[in-house]
Amino acid sequence: MICPSCGSEYREGFTRCADCDVDLVESIVAERENLAPLTLESSGELVAELTDRLEKAGVPYAIEAGTALNLLDDPGAEIEGPEDWAARVWVAKGFEERGERILDQIRDARRLEREEQERRRSGR
Ligand SMILES: [Zn+2]
Image 1: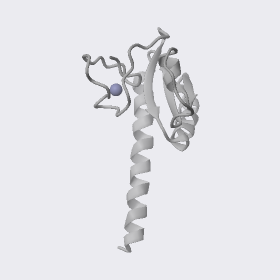
Image 2: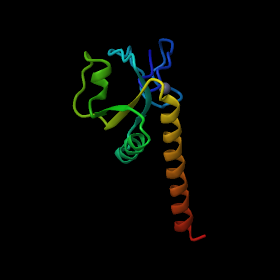
Image 3: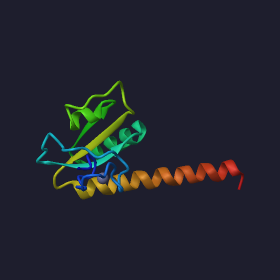
């Protein structure tokens, strides 16, 4: 079993990646030799910000997004309807570190923003 987000391999019996909290797949069908998976996100807002920042930073990227992502990983799978929206973001090999750094910055900024909002709500 493989995590479609980070590529970690798991023994049979595992169904979810402990790091990414996403469902594991049997195999990643399309070999993407020159792309490295950066992240799997369920927030369109975050993805929009991320791709914008990657573009400005000159980091080549590709995204796969939609409500049937599982079918990209496992074309034979059957789904009953749209699943939760998710997007997978890839960066060209060699740009992984810059991609990670940008993603971390965005996550930090979003966390600070959330904390700030909570502080204001609680009136402190
Ligand atoms: Zn993972």
